[in-house]
Length: 133
Image 1 (cartoon, rainbow, N blue to C red):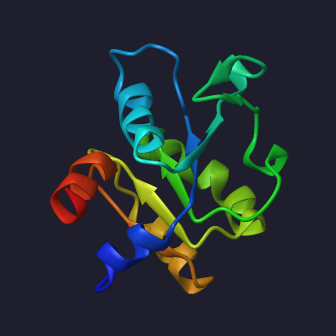
Image 2 (tube, one colour; image 1 turned 90 degrees about the vertical axis):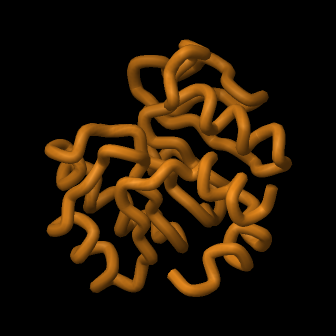
């Protein structure tokens, strides 16, 4: 995406699919970094539904979230992503960001065909630091 810096400056809401309460896991410290940078971070993980992370109640599914979502930051294994495709398409985020080590070209192509931007195999925290300090 050519205008990634501008997109990150304009984005306000980041849903975190696979959010985790363990501060040693990337699924905690990456969204924690983003929350400290002013983004509204919306945690999604059925295993922790009802808990509170980043001042928000964890929900079980993306469809449980209200309002528009700029980015869905994904912390799920590559091989299970297709199971989230329909829900992502229904949610219509502007971008789906697959964290480092997560790649699924068929999944990414399906999202792109629906007009959703996709980043694969990159850490949102690292890219944010590179582009925005």
